[in-house]
Image 1 (cartoon, one colour):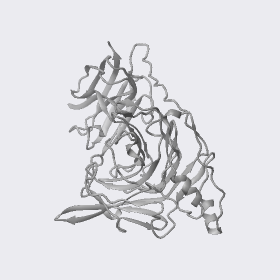
Image 2: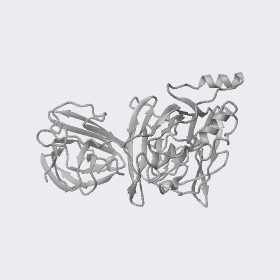
Image 3: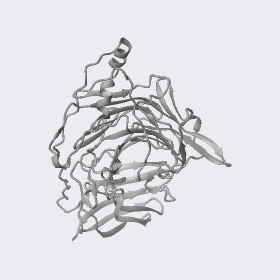
Image 4: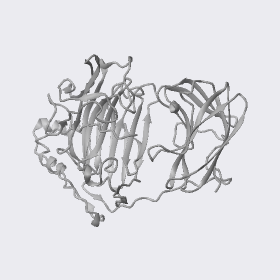
Amino acid sequence: MKKRRKVLALIGSLLLVFAALAICANEAIPYDESDNAKALEPAPAPKQQADSSDQAKEIAVPQYEGYYLLWNDEFDGDSLNTEIWNMEARPPRWTNNELQEYTLSAENIFIRDGKLVLKAIKTQKNGRDSYTSGKVNTMGKKDFMYGKVVVSAKVPAGQGLWPAIWMMPTKESLYGPWPRCGEIDIMEVLGNQPHIAYATVHYGLPHAQQQKFKVITDGTTFADDFHEFALEWEPGEMRFYVDGELIHTVNDWYTALGGVEKPYPAPFNQNFYLQLNLAVGGDWPGNPDETTDFTKAEFEIDYVRVYQKSYYDTNVKKPEKVFRAPLEDGNLIYNGDFAEAEDLNDEINWKFLLFQGGEGTAEIKDGMMIIKTRNEGKVDYSVQLVQANLPMYEGKKYRITFAARASAPRDMIVCVSAPDRNWIRYFKDTPLTMTTAWQTYTYEFTMTEKDDNNGRLEFNMGNRGSTADIYIRNVRVEMIK
């Protein structure tokens, strides 16, 4: 996805108690490329001198083994703490074709019942729909390198609403403009699918990203209640959590300056700051429509807490890529004959996905994958069957084969994508038409990009003008030259 210059925020209170601590948080920890073996040693947490009310607040903030509290904001005051937060004003379409104007207005950014509220408002301007919203950040006030970020938030539901918790480097020019500077997205939710929370890391050049998501499957959404989103950021690894569940681990990234790749772990070896915002519209979520209820378009944040370890070892090395071995018959697809039952929601072998209004089911039965679609959704990947972790080697030639039929004539799209490389295609999106009779489909392509251990075979069945059932069997991807 493209860069989202959303400005989210972090929050910190306990001002008197953590005054010395705040100074420590604002000091950048210098990075010397010639001495990457140095250990990062933030100053230890000072002893606290607090009155009884401050002590009560401190006790309410959880502690984590190996971490001390660097700063936090529980939003217990009457107004935004401007010693921690900046309010950011931006015009409409500043980035990503988003529609909102970010303002400094108390109608868009305010504290209510111990929570920070970023509210999107729909108005009329020159006879056309117009939108304002709120965006805050901690740039220059609470910048830090490495730590544990914990945010409790409740998102709004509604087409075109796009809340986010994310981080950008204080000095974007250190490695060059986005995406070379790096971006850490702790949480993003699209209002039209509020049961999915995304965690993403952007870097490059060329632009690359690694993204995973948490899907709530119990019928509730992230708009129904507060959920906790967390990041553990260390010199050679980032771990993302939703309600304490690890959903994404990233330890392989890069950046280049002047065509020369910089030493790992660049660009994530510099101070970053936190941002919170509620966007309206844009390239990813699409624009609001008549179903969007702006009386409920509020992004609520209960607390922001940032912890840090007293010691980080910066002598880290970029991990070697692990390429999955083909099966004995040369097939790069595991369980391509659908001989084994699988959990189609996990990250092992086959995965069935629904996005943007897609509704349906998938099951393995009698040596086939059977996909039944109830709603085709808004995009081709609204109903999607994939298998990732395919080893793709530069200059090698590959062959894709499979058999498919449908309960009524219809089509779908097949491709091989690069989830970690901004979804470029190693094998282009290719429509195919199915009939009620089994047909075998064969495609060949040459991998022209750099080696990638995470190619992904995709069958995209959404937004194709049909909800006819699809049957697939005998799927193979093999290196032929």
